[in-house]
Amino acid sequence: MLALSIRQPHAELILRGIKLVEYRSRATTITGVRFYVYACKRLDPFMGLDFTPDDVETGVLVGTVAISHCDGGSWHLVKPRRLRHLLIPIRHPQPVWFRPF
Picture 1 (cartoon, rainbow, N blue to C red):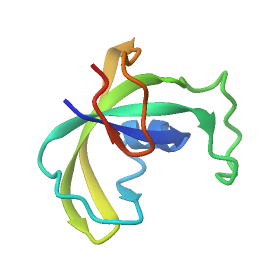
Picture 2 (spheres, rainbow, N blue to C red):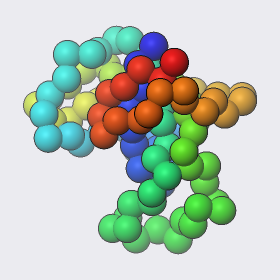
Picture 3 (cartoon, helix red, strand yellow):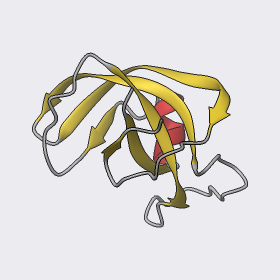
Picture 4 (spheres, rainbow, N blue to C red):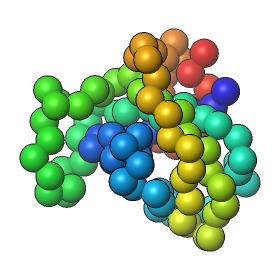
C-alpha cells in the first residue's frame, strides 16, 4: 500500500472529514485505492490554526483515505479512516507518494 506525505494539521483535518480536497501541483492516476496518510514531522507554518506538535501526531502513519477523482491538481478525498495504532514507516518518507513498508 502506498502512503502520501501530508503536513499537519492538514492530515488531521482530512481524517476528521473536514478537508475533502487535497491540492497538489499535478494530477494523479491513483484513484479508487486506499492509501496511508503520513503526517509529516513539520507543521504547515501558513495554516493559521493553533496546532502544535503536542496537539497532533507527527512522523507516523495516522490513517487511510482514497481519492474518488482528480480534477487537475485537485484530488477529491473520500472514506477517511483513522488507524487504531499509529505506524512508523520503515522506509524514508518522500515528498509525495512512497512505500512505507
